[in-house]
Image (tube, rainbow, N blue to C red):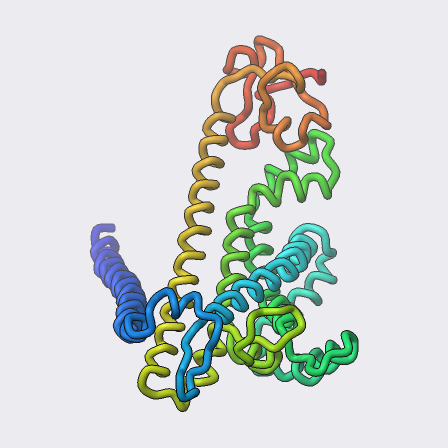
Length: 356
């Protein structure tokens, strides 16, 4: 037995060292990228001026009197990302609910590989299909001189973020303990009520993480957007050709030099800061929600008499079903808690009760 432990300990030490090195390398890469962007991007901002750079409405990097205002790029990226999230999140979320909780196993076995295949399609293929199919359709449908527009970019981005949202949300929904759903069904809830009032709230952290991944994918996409957005430095309009922050860097970096090249590094720095702010804000909200959920669980585990709706106090079932379903009051002698209580594993009454 001692010999076995002595053989295992060196391997555990080696694996711990490997894990530490991998984590350290990841941190080093993040720090290197951050420092490099700061060093490369700050000179142009100092020379152009922070206000003129961020709030300037004109970008003419190759003119005799160059202008380096990136406000059109910032607004276009914000509008495009928000539009893609508004369209893509509901579709991805409902698809994840369908695959995880509603679809028959045979149908789910067909739909799930299609979603995985959608995740494996290269960005240039999305852009090519959008340029050959979506752009002409938009031009003809809305009688526009050019169909390449912000609208086409939003549609393409919404499709591209679907696989991330569907996969992560489905995994989060499947991770919900089945006892929660069984307790809901035992209280008289329908399957759909159980899904949307028990499973979805319990998986909200994972679903929010899926939305974060979708935002990161949308705001960081470049190749497909170049092909469908028109790549013109205009103030954003739904049916006009526009340029995103990412496409501004990708389209001019090959021939840029001097101040123009430094300005492109500054655009990359602004994009990097945007993504950091989004991640920090969303992670803060997720942590706050997690703390609230843990506090709620702690309160539900405390001994407290069950009260019917409308008489003050709301137990777990009232919060989930809003008093629409049966509520149980326990006899004084039932369970180890005086006045009745909730069982810690499943939050059901400790022993038999009577419906109010």
